[in-house]
Amino acid sequence: MYLVGTQHGKPLRLLSPLLAALAVLLSACEAKQIDSASLHKASDSPPLILSNQAGGAFTISNRSQGSLQAPQPKLSGEQQLAWAVGKSFATQAWVTSPSSTTARDGLGPLFNANSCTGCHVRNGQGELPEKGLGTILRLPTPSPLYGEQLQDMAVSGFKPEGQITWQTINSSHTDAQGNQHQLQRRQFSVDNTAASVSARLAPTLIGMGLLDNISDADILANSDPDDKNHDGISGRANIRSSTQDGTIHIGRFGWKASQSSLHEQIALAFHQDMGISSSLHSPQNCIGDNCQAYSVANTELEISDKLLNAVTNYIANLAVPAAAHDAQSQQGFKIFEQLACAACHTPRFQTRLPSIQLVSTDSAKKSNTATRHTETIFPFSDLLLHDMGAALADQNPTDETPANEWRTAPLWGLGIRARNPDNARLLHDGRARSITEAILWHGGEAEHSKIRFTQLSHQERTTLLYFLKAL
Image (cartoon, rainbow, N blue to C red; front, side):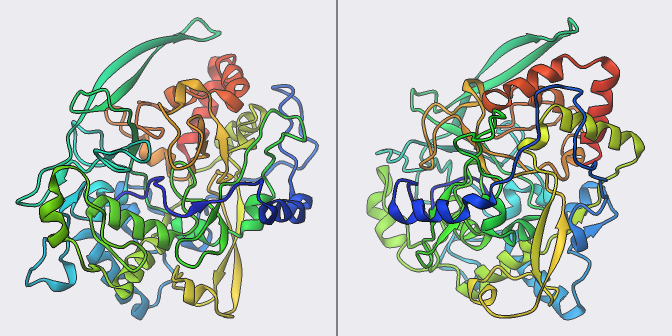
């Protein structure tokens, strides 16, 4: 199951009277971004002292790959049992219907994986197609052949919609120090046809319950779509109307920030990635050659609200591995700020968690009056959309979002994701094979930061990368 940016809630334009009023009410909350006029300009504000408690109370000291599968440490014994129930429905394979395993049947008939961790392997990133599951293709909406997303697997008696194919395109970049970097990206397609597609890599699952509990107002406080402070950064919130109840919220999940809550994101992932319907997403419409059989095979809701909540609460309560900051990392963070990277990769947020330790994303539970407490977390993301330039742009707009705009990716756990140099896969389509490559692909609002990165001395660059690997 992918937690990727897929169309879900109905987007609402800022031109509407309701959202215009919302923007006026919250405009006073806009926060001034970091001044990026000079690489070595001293900041007027006190330096942020980095914390290794990246996830606040959700933090565990383990930084191995296995840490991505651990529960947050504050769960009681009873809550750990509830968490384990959700884990079982996220990690074990779903099967076709009808089956003797009635609680776990309903797979397909078209799908991309038969479990959440089929793509989020051990709760980590997806793989590129030649190595395994975890890459999906989004299509312009509507596509008469494939719908919004290519399903490349099917149950017996059905045909997959097609297979992921690609051509590799190489380029080079020479930095200010004369070093040449070989960059690589893929032009993805369906069965080597000319269909216009956009690749999405399944992200790591840590910290999503914490992001889900950041207030909309705190996210909007960093929004500056008209660049009123003239710092070159114009992040905007993706304002969505919830499919569940029609209320207006800020999109925060997915590569396009197209999902406003973790509960709705996971329901959509079950629907589009596994072909499993729920109370939020009815059975899929027929597409392509499978219509006659499809109408018979996919007519009932296949995951109950109770089980959907269980899976959501499992993911919401995953632990966050501790950062590994020290004096050198703190120096690297200063360079990170001087490059204006922190203008989008906002280091910290306050999140309001229920005092009962199990973080629930069930909307009915979130709306109660339970006592909540504040946790400081360090996701290094503003959760806003930014223009990232032509090099990172999709072939077409997707998810009702311009092709060149992407949500700022959280950086917590980056050191774990980039640890294996032979299989590092960063950015939305996994094209970057190292942190350096990921930075060099930045453009648009991040163009000046990228240029300054290429002008760093060898020692400064080493120190910056040391900091990023400590996240």
